[in-house]
Image (cartoon, rainbow, N blue to C red; front, side, top):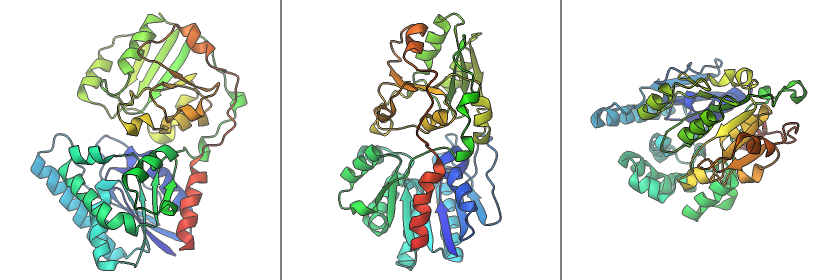
Length: 369
């Protein structure tokens, strides 16, 4: 049996791709899984699967933490994870993002060559991000570059463009070790599109995910919805918000817009979203990470046969343009008729964007080692 250690400093409940992977791995009788992560502080239901998947948690840092307290939480996570790895002695280690790298670096110093190393990045972070970000993560990244990247058997990004940018930043990494691991929803989300009723006025728009007034077009779209005088309705499901965004949405006082402050638990998304016509992706794409991002929400909306309306600044979504997926300038939106005329509401998606197809690649790479 393969003994797989997964290190994900950020709470796994905030990242559906990692919980989807854990669900997939939990069905494999030839894998034993141990996960090191942090306790979520946003009221999400704690992830738990089965006895072969054991999860160890330490307190998560928050914006309210003093710097000394934040450093202690990083230190505590690194210690718990490092000593956990010493006890577990994994055959395979998968870690996510530079936040999680330090205990693997320490473990590698002691047990070089005794395990296979896999690394995945939810986001693309360029050199400027590390230079201007948190000092502790900058330090972890230094050890990644000097030791972990060259030792890894697998390093993945979520799409080809992000992988290309990553390779430009780290040209010494062997191309054969660089992989794409896309963020798709599970096959259980698949619906029979013939049972779907859509495109009845008022047109129902939905947004699911994190939001900020600075980095998304939420204010511009809310203004546009209000200008349609009841022909367009918008529901917003979001829990990971800056305080100014919470205040803005809570004070809208619009009969056409509903803000669900607690968001949606991931497993409940299919049942709720089937009642909508168009799913929104509103990022302003100020960085390469977002500019070249094919958002999780794109594939989640498509799995449920929603149309998708996204910002024309998001170049990573453009390859998926179709009668179901259309880009718009959210700073200058046309009237509702012009919006609806861009979509083919009778079209049914042809591609199957499901997580299991992606995770098969990672699983097969692990079991052959």
